[in-house]
Length: 392
Length: 87
Image (cartoon, rainbow over all chains, first blue to last red; front, side, top):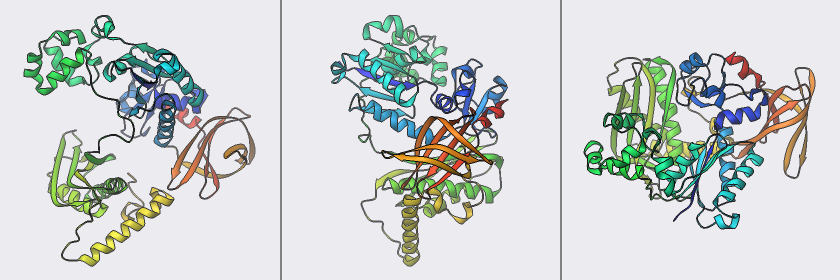
């Protein structure tokens, strides 16, 4: 049987801000994308959570719920640096570490736990190292699989250490509300409640065929998850399957119908996507544009091309033409661009039959700009159109 | 994200491959660093940028940033700005 450890940083972004500014300790700290705009809460300290503030909540609502909260614009680069250090500490304990998100990781400690005197001792040492190195607390769950380890780390927060064995399932896992099951979102939980399923135990007792009828293939997964079964391995960094798509989206500061503004935002998004594709040495054939209107309705349109592309201008041309062909119901709140149907760019691109000179010139220009960005940072070269407005 | 806003002069020690700010001159005063609260590193292209969250002798918090390409120090708004935001 495997032994999996899940480490989850406690109120990560908010805790980092408190460590950087100890005057914030004990206060309701809310970290968000932008304190003034229409962004959402990224992290809330436990003091802010007492007012009902939680991650994903619009900042305006968080301000209403917690008027005395201290709202801080997050610093993603700082959090990424700490995330990298967190995983390097984890790798001191096991070579099989899967960074699951910016503030949580799975470790497969099956083969290494005895070197530390057992799984619990390993977890204690890991927590101590994280506190010593990063001055941050975390909660740890230990279980025979990833699903149960993640559930376990959530059972005792903050600064917890919980072991969940298979024999604990009837007493500590099955009585939990069904929305606590890793992978069950609000909508699924709602549908399950309409079937009379309130706890994870209720779900485990429901016949598989009923779940299959209601949820299709997902029904089978729901049943095995409720029974505490999960065969997914911990995938060490570098061994992940290749990405299926590369995309970025952006919420505008104010809703807009101005083509000039929207195309500038679109160009910035396409530049980001193009750069990420080229950095990963990939190119794609399908461009998808996502538009969220001011009434929160969402439209997604895709176009698949004959050839693979990964240059900003090429992606922009397709995304712009989709934008122009889309009927706008109202002003636009969010734009998103993604490229899928990816392939590695080890095969050279096929130049077009006509206008080859311009094509080669544009490619050389992009390569030069990329080399400059590699050396001096992303902001050293930008499209002229983006230089003064809408820095996405 | 907090923007680096002002270039400053910093007295610092480079030792064992690490840099440690000791004092800085800002707003017409010399501020002595009592404690480095946190440090982290980001990259501007190939060059690291070192960030320090520091506490001065007067118990004020600041963020200092060393750009290793330009070899310049900048200071970003006192972290207390965040507190006024929400009050």
